[in-house]
Length: 306
Ligand SMILES: [Ca+2]
Ligand SMILES: [Ca+2]
Ligand SMILES: [Cu+2]
Image (cartoon, rainbow, N blue to C red; front, top):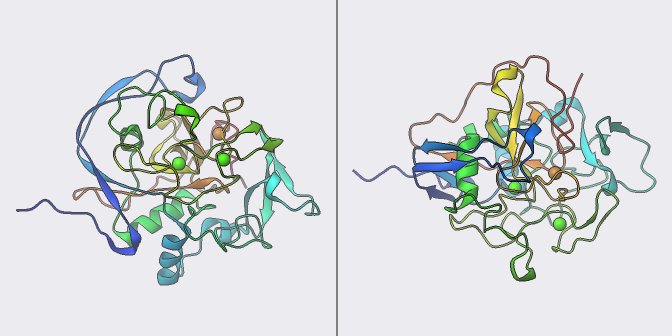
């Protein structure tokens, strides 16, 4: 009998990731101890399939058209927007305590990434943002897909390379070429956009890794189905890959082993997701109701709190 194949409806293009043993995590001088990047562990993974791209606005729009899904950000009426994207005359907004460049903006949601005055024109092929993990899970269930485990995410992002810093090797810009969408310049004052983008880029920009996956590092953070710290008993989920806001001087989290977390209901303008699939794993993984969230793991993930 031929092996079952993942769904291809709704624009999903999944690539097979081989099963086997993977060396995950990192212990070099750039590993962030507070993020539990190490110790390096060897994990056996079953084969699975991974989205070539983060879910785009176009794919997410098809889901919302079909289901009338109301995202968490729409229910709360606001989401976190990076301050430099707000117009100069924008009414003063509340800053996130640990990371003042994040502003709580009324009316910011996936269709209005910088607030009510913004729209998706020219950005249908960019990753959907302002989605909480609950929205990502709903999308996956609808599409017959699922979120990757954190280990699957990292194994896939490594693209078959062993213990390299980036999905393509050890050097950030081989031959002076940019390979991902992060921040250039001084964070958070000025992004020179030397890699071609300030803010998100199309999901298929930049060359893919050897598994055919685009933009695992940079562009948007990606939700996984796992807890950031399973021992904490809270609802802080592990997120991976870093975003267009990441810079070495600050978080250094665009490295393939880097991780942080955010609460299940949080949403920001640099947070998206990609899907995974395997024949024997259900799409919907129920989330345990969260306890009190631990202190924010850092600057990349402002938390929604009541
Ligand atoms: Ca950039
Ligand atoms: Ca990414
Ligand atoms: Cu970052």
